[in-house]
Structure formats: C-alpha cells, structure tokens
Amino acid sequence: QDGLTGSPWGDWALYTDSPLRAFESDLGVQAPLGFFDPVGYTKDGSAENFGRRRQSEIKHGRIAMLAAMGYITPEVAGKFPGYCSFSLNLKFADIPNGLAGISKVPGAGWAQILAYMSFCEVTQDQSAGTPGGRGDFGFKVLTAS
Image 1: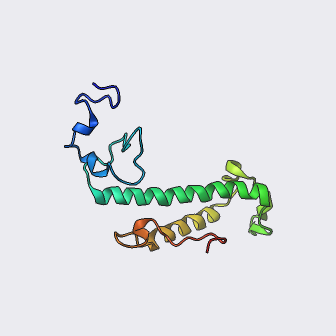
Image 2: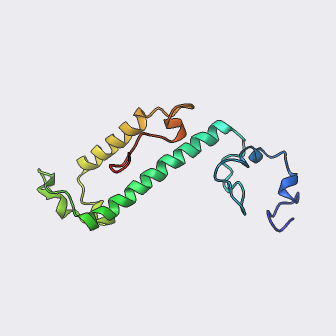
Image 3: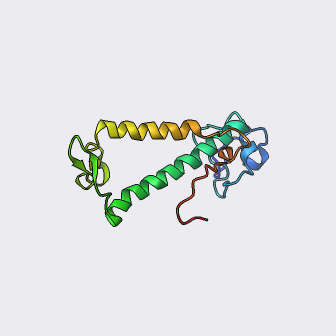
C-alpha cells in the first residue's frame, strides 16, 4: 500500500483502468483528495448519472441555502403580519422560530408546502442540454440583475 491513497496497486496516477478516471478532470476536483467519491456512486463511470447527481446537488444546495435564510430572517427582520390559520386563530407571530415551529404549523400548511415543492420539482425540465440540466433554474433573488 502507498501512504497517499491506501491503495494496494500503488500510485494512483499509474492506475488508468478505473471508471473513476472519467471524472478526474471535472470541475471541483481538487488536491489533495482529487476526485472524492467515498460511497462509490460513480463507480459505473456513467457521465449521464454523474451529471444528474451533480445537478441534484446544486439544486438541493440552493434549497438548503434558502432554508438557512428562512431560519435567520424571522429573527432579524420579524415575521409576516396576519394569520397563518384563521380557523385556529394562529398568527404568524405566534409560531416560534426554528425547530419549535414545526409542530405549530397546521397540517393544511404542511400540505401546501409539500404541494408547492412537488409543483416545482415536476415543472422543471432537467433533461440534458436544457438550462435546468446545467443547474440554472431561473431563480433570481430580488437584487440580482
């Protein structure tokens, strides 16, 4: 074994038969790890699967960033005025921030959130060669031009 990769065949540069080499020069490959795939999702060497997973990673990363802002913004800027649920007499101000708010949102509110998420997922054309396939979903923040 060599001390760098822990590989029984020795120097990684000499091992050219691996399907992982298909992605060795892709965007995001950096020293000292090189192409990092500890779980082995790309061991089949399929560029189509790799592209789909990369596109999903970009989309889910953006969703995570928006979720982080959704966590911070009510603390800094305050909450919406008015009611979250008229029938339950529940105002937005009554819903606590963070994880404590999960149990306070009514089931119909969660159904609306899930319906909108499904709509966004189904209506995006993410096939190869489209803007969605490259990770561009047309989302622009208010300050972007």
